[in-house]
Image 1 (cartoon, helix red, strand yellow):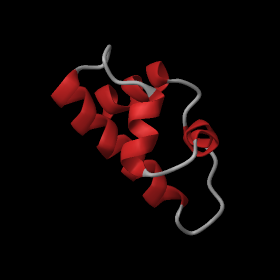
Image 2 (cartoon, one colour; image 1 turned 120 degrees about the horizontal axis):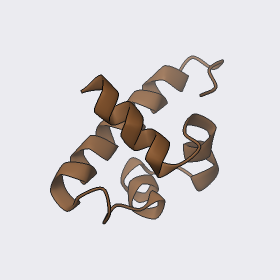
Image 3 (cartoon, helix red, strand yellow; image 1 turned 90 degrees about the vertical axis):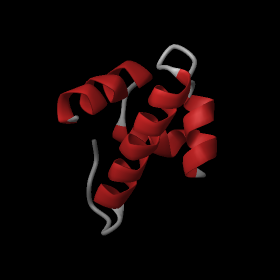
Image 4 (cartoon, helix red, strand yellow; image 1 turned 135 degrees about the vertical axis):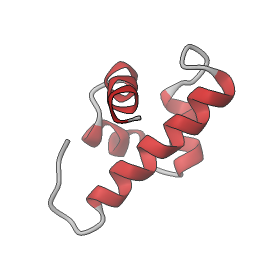
Length: 65
C-alpha cells in the first residue's frame, strides 16, 4: 500500500468498504477487480497501487472486520 497524497487513506478505505459490500452481496468468488473498480469509479492501476490482488484485499477485509 502506498501513501503520500492527502486522499490516499480515504481511497484505501473506499476500496475496502466497497469490497465488503460486494463480497456480501455477490460473494468473493463472483466479485472481480472490474466490478470493484467500476463501483469505486477508479482505474485498474489505482486498485493495484493499494492491493496486489483480490486475495490480498480479502485478507485485509477479513482481518479488519
